[in-house]
Image (cartoon, rainbow, N blue to C red; front, side, top):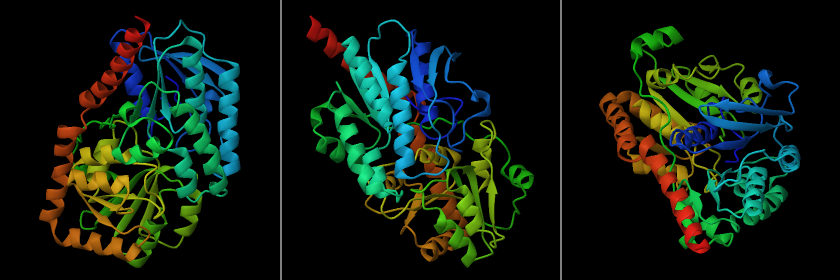
Length: 404
């Protein structure tokens, strides 16, 4: 597997790549991962890897090969291009030393990772299987990144190069299908492989967790957990907090926009920042909130479905989604029945919905209860990993038949 993001990164794509690789290793496969250096979501190099250009380590039965790359603290199209170029150059120059693989899997949106994985698969004449978690070309165009329009065209060409060489293409949401097909992929080669809920269920007392965090029992707490980047459009939460000091907003996590958000919220006393929660504590922190918020810029449509949703649903609290109604994120919230949609970048509309939930605890509890049920029905780890097993088995079966 080629995945820029991997453990010890604990948010975003990293946990899915890690659990998948460890799952295959547990089944007896000699599993190797070509990864970057840990840096996400803070976009700062993990201090444990300072000064290391290459690393080989064993994690959960998986052999992980790491290659150094730039880590841009501020996101612009040029800096993101340098990030991808440094990954591509180093991974092509120093591919992992390992036995001949039976298949090569890539976790996209990493353009470098997809190109490198396609090249490794071609060299060994084995199936190449990209799993599309995000689409970088669409992201560059929709996220608001500086220079994004020009970057989108370059990224789309790299994605087309990689996807055109795939035996099968996995997509985590149906909303990605049209763009993947537009890149020349035969619809018959696309498989739906949704992500799963990779966190444990809450186990602690909500009241005790709230008291430990300093959250008053008589105040509504709205929590956003995860990456603080451009596409999230978290300014809507800052502005909603400014409109009503009676509601507490908490931004938990890290990202390249955290400093700008802190500056914007400097005179907003009811908005608080927390570092990422420890893995063991994370489910209880989510469950302690009254509402879990997911936000995206209005321009974000079909390039991303936030991985945080699988964790939110497992927490059993209502989700309020400030996202475009026609996008994949909105589709997933509607499908779950566990949340409410509000127009993106509209703090007044967001605040109005929050007040309605606060005034109707029974409805908030009903929405929250749908989340774990949806996880059990559709987002279990066994189901998610099983779909990726099927993807791999199908590709290997086709390869075997072709060789025969």
